[in-house]
Image 1 (cartoon, rainbow, N blue to C red):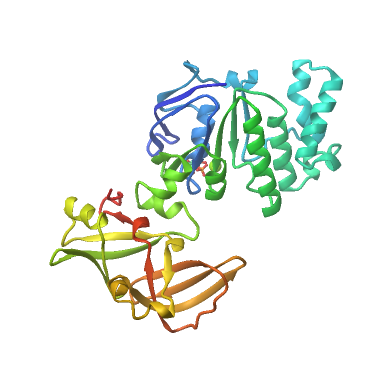
Image 2: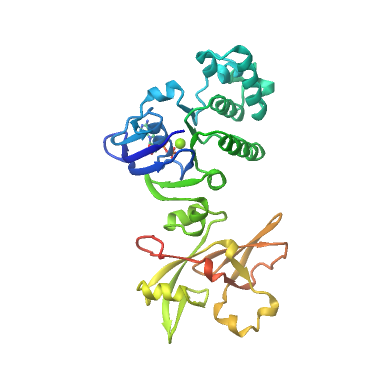
Amino acid sequence: MAKLVLDRVSKQYDGKNFVVENFNLEIDRKEFVIFVGPSGCGKSTVLRMIAGLEEITTGGIYIDERPVSGKMAARGDIAMVFQNYALYPHMSVYDNIAYSLKIKGVPKKEIRERVARVAHILELEAVLKKKPSQLSGGQKQRVAMGRAMIRTPKLFLMDEPLSNLDAKLRTQMRKEISKLYRDSSSTFIYVTHDQIEAMTLGTKIVVLNHGQIQQIATPRELYESPANLFVAGFIGSPQMNFWKARVEQDQKRVKLVFDDMGEFVLSEPKAQLLRSRGWLGRQIIVGVRPENLRVMKPEEADHRELEEKWLYAVAKVFEMDGAVSYLHLESVHDKITICMKGQKVYDIDQIVSFTFDETKIHFFDPETEEAIR
Ligand code: ADP
Ligand code: MG
């Protein structure tokens, strides 16, 4: 078990550009923390600094109140799964997995049993005698996982450990990592650019972009209240819809006026939110997730109360994906993706009326890109 503190950590490789900037984070014992963000945003750099493998330019990192150093990794307090595997090329798969136990002097019989268990979980039994050069990328990745899993470190650091696996194996391995976490008392820090891995594994997610923390939250908080446009667009698939709208007051009512999709009269408390934050007469960005949109049913066409909440656009693409379907609409200025259950087929190039669940919409400041809450 380890408590980890990152205190105003910054990193420059070339003395000019910060690839990580002012990173503050506290991780309690037995948390599963995910760093998620696009490629190049600094995830691996932060992880390597935590492992003591990369110098920190300014700030400090402490594990159980002691500054980190590479020694901890060598001592076995930390198990790291590297993005590039870092296997011993001259050793067999068996010896790669067994290595840390051997140098600790664990009895041979116990090593055999532990390697067998890990090899079974990772489906590596058939390749135990092979050398890393004889393995596929996915197999190498699992050997790297095996080397970490065979130990019981205070801290697991994993850098995109599933990125080279096919979809089925990845889902299976995700479950194994969940189990490993549940059954151990270790702290996990896990880097991924895959938001599904982030949302399913993490107890706490740190969203990064350009070396800066965008939001730290539970999976549910990230999904339900993204702090800014970046997080809103990054988390959730298909992506949240974003549309520009003007906020107008019409008698007592507050409405969103879209460029060419129509108008939407807001109910309280969303109307009150925009009024009280000073957004009347101004332009905002409205965000709605595809699953919170729906198409008008024929019997709703004459529904007077609903009339002021219908928008419209032209159907362009309809995709069926098993249990759910996606309808993509376009207006002159906006694109709309609607996710729905079932298989109803839509005619392309027809005008479609749609609406959204008002309690689930998000507003963003177009200049700062921060959520309006
Ligand atoms: P991520 O893991 O999120 O893809 P990295 O931490 O690997 O991102 O990289 C962050 C930035 O730092 C990138 O712009 C990358 O090119 C740069 N970088 C990473 N390692 C080095 C290095 N050893 N020397 C110089 N620049 C580096
Ligand atoms: Mg990386």
